[in-house]
Length: 211
Ligand SMILES: Cc1ncc(COP(=O)(O)OP(=O)(O)O)c(N)n1
Ligand SMILES: Cc1nc(C(=O)O)sc1CCOP(=O)(O)O
Ligand SMILES: [Mg+2]
Image (cartoon, rainbow, N blue to C red; front, top):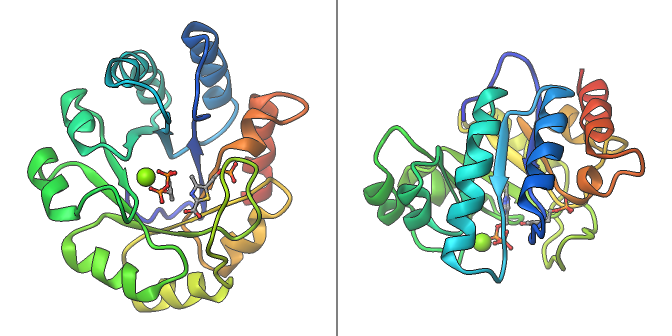
């Protein structure tokens, strides 16, 4: 992922369970057709490897057909196996150099950095392609321990060239302040998939707010 000249873009995270893959694929296709989305992260939790691989094989071509890159959460080995565009690593999900060895240099590695400039510098020095700060707001998707101030985005943007993603409870209503503070991408899950008018409407609303 690179900083874009287009300002702040939406980074879409899948629900942690997908019961009906065909139905979800249709929803993803409609959603990505509704506006710009830079990235889709497959974030399945508590499922076996085959389920992640099958979901990636179905969903990645859809992301690519809309010019979105496709990342796998947590698992550099599975990202390499399905030839995804990269991986998102939390602090407990393995180190960047090992993921780089598995994935090679053309792929993206993102790292969760919570509210810590120190973790972000470390990730950058180790070769991450982006860092993620959060959770900026309470999340319906997971319990979060860290609550960064908005100015971490501003400081990061001023002192480095490495893109940063803001995450945690981000909605079409609150994303603008993160973009204005310096986020290059805003990551969202529940505000898209649980939007009362459907996920495509949510993507449209994000695009309007970030325009
Ligand atoms: C873009 C982005 N930022 C942060 C996270 C969180 O990663 P992690 O801390 O490993 O937590 P889980 O997502 O694995 O529950 C993320 N997935 N994506
Ligand atoms: C997966 C994840 N990581 C976070 C962090 O703070 O690192 S917050 C979060 C949940 C993102 O989903 P939603 O947009 O529904 O809040
Ligand atoms: Mg993780």
